[in-house]
Image 1 (cartoon, rainbow, N blue to C red):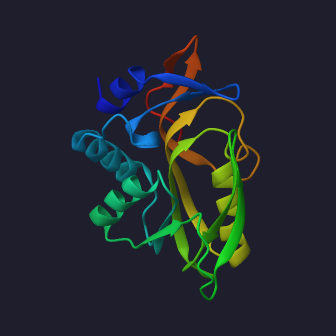
Image 2 (cartoon, one colour):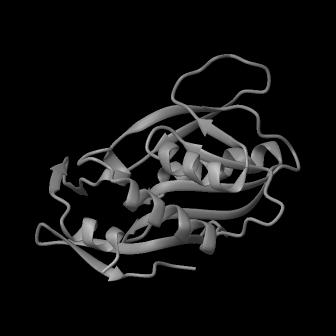
Length: 188
């Protein structure tokens, strides 16, 4: 069994405002992230993503950073982190992030018209974060070549009708307080 699948099957489940949430090293930073698990995920992303002529990897803070940093190191593609802090630098784009459990403002710098980007995140659940980012990227005129999320939680999400297919490494659901793997190879 691969480490990603095994680690998800062992993930504890918590409930926040009626939302069943699995706690996992990739999505939460706890329990501790073993290097072998991160390496496995990065190799799977590199094999699955369309990386041809990508100018930038774009990822939201905070939980996309470790995955995207590792992919950047392995591919030599520069990394742009979309942050929750505003700096007011020239060209900064503000976007509204709404997920199943929070609402925030986020800020993007250093993505320009014509940039070919890979959008990379840890989990696709409600799709609120990725939808806000794809809208911001389209607004600046970037070309979204590929969108990859490591884990997809089953159910409808905001990207379903967006025209952006999200590739995933593994798809899961939470049933009776446990993680159930619904597709161990993900989408795409």
